[in-house]
Image (cartoon, rainbow, N blue to C red; front, side):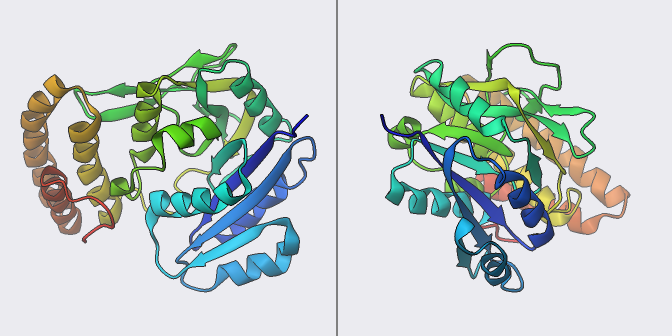
Length: 294
């Protein structure tokens, strides 16, 4: 009988200390056959070389000279992993730490129903006290995704699963392909889940699979760059993935939101964020995705 195999894909971007903690928690797992692929996504210094030196043959590391975003890095990892024809692909943030049973629990949940295509663990904060994610929902009228933070007893289907950690069946990759590169980062996980659901798969959270997450470790949530991405990608997400009737409403709602947000940033003397929000709104409306132009 063929062993179930998993390709685990981790992105590193100027975050080698977090990546080492993640790998150290991951590499003690011995009850599942897996490989680990680390994509160094354009770090300022060659952190890929240091990771190779520390972990030698335990992981495979690829270095990119440019930051291609979450979508670009993960797509490279998936493309490389395909060469070994794994049964599952696991996308895992480098600022997480895992529990030893989590991978086996994810696989068992995925295999419990042939319609299950994507599986997430329950995600706690880094202090291991509060639940950050136990399922996801989408409010199309606001163009926002929401994380459920409730104690989970049984497997439940969700509108989306966070890209912080999700296990994807090989059949899903074969059916819908790679992550949508127009997003670069943010909303790509929700978009991928919508595509999987349209292809007939469930996106679920496994109650007994647990990991811990240090939020926004690699980004400034209130900086201009993130402000731009959130403004742009929200529009791209709705325009490309929402039901058609929502798009007309959202156009007017988002125009009003632009006026309010732009005014707020100017009043609070956040000129860079005001410009970033306007630029993101413009690029999103015009369908300009991909690598950010800011």
